[in-house]
Length: 458
Image 1 (tube, rainbow, N blue to C red):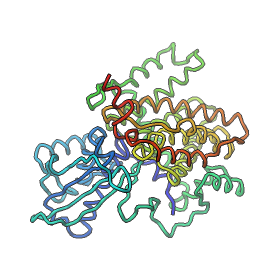
Image 2 (image 1 turned 180 degrees about the vertical axis):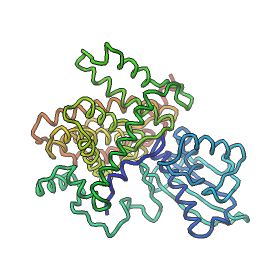
Image 3 (image 1 turned 180 degrees about the horizontal axis):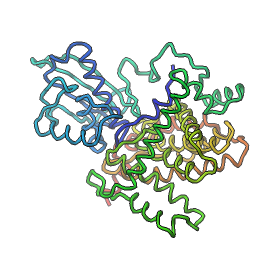
Image 4 (image 1 turned 45 degrees about the vertical axis):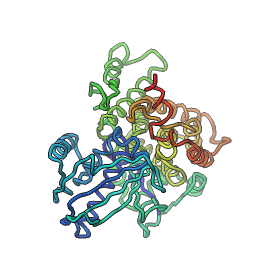
């Protein structure tokens, strides 16, 4: 069993893949299960309980909104901002919702959507859905876990989060970076070539490339929207969007061709800020591998396309395939959930992905790619997740910009060597997982430690 690059790069809405995309998918799975079991017409009420990190920061992360939308039958990659606003207004003004747009039920949020401060056993992002009939008897109850990047498990799939396709046999299966490098050397393939061969297990090469370019289109559109949307981000912190003003400055004649040798970094900052401000506002982004870290891959990919010689569409495809291979290693051997291992599992992983991907498209060997990816994570080890006010704004937005610059530097360092280095990517992934396990829960997306408490106290 394995996962596809398209399981890692998913289109959804902000501000959080684990708190928004995951709960929406879980809610949709639950009501779809009721429909398939023939129980939907019997449902008169549903109670949703959010646990752990979802309970602690769910309101700030939009988990309540995501659950309502999922129960109504909306999906993360298709729902529009206009539809969200209309649906929420109707539900909250009438005190009722329509399951899958078929079955009307009473739904009063204070009673039917409960936030708990305790966690369920398997993962900090736990959810329990219970459906009742007209006699308040339980028709169905299911527990789900949002494990990062929009991935959702139920109790039947715990311990097996990979793609559920037993009959799929990949031409180049790998579990570790060492295995990946061995396959590349044995078959004289780049990492992107090997990933492309694996992806063609599910669809044609042409379809894979077209789908990856569509992902790139969404990323570009997100940057463009972030550069034009003015105003203050929602949530109460009154964080002003910075990308539009920076965009205007960088496009002035005197700065469009900067004399400052580091001026390109201003553009990289812009690309990352634009994406994560859109994410914080609930806009459409690509999980890469999560929403909280969604600005890093687009920022570094924009850097490649705009400032690197020879950049083309084929390079974009190779970049995303290589980034996907690196993300797969973290997903299989550690975690990409901030609630599980802190922000090292989100921004750290995205930095590692971007560093390795940029190295490949700039001509690096598989060993240089692995080195760059290792650098990208090694210097994010221990990174905490402490969102101020429970919002994906401070320090999340700037953190994406900083990690984008770090990824570019990691690629440059790796390209200046021959791929030989002391710490392996497998070792740093293992270390990240162990560090996350040792990290106090207050630093793992609960807003109970770090900046989340000290900024408010000041």
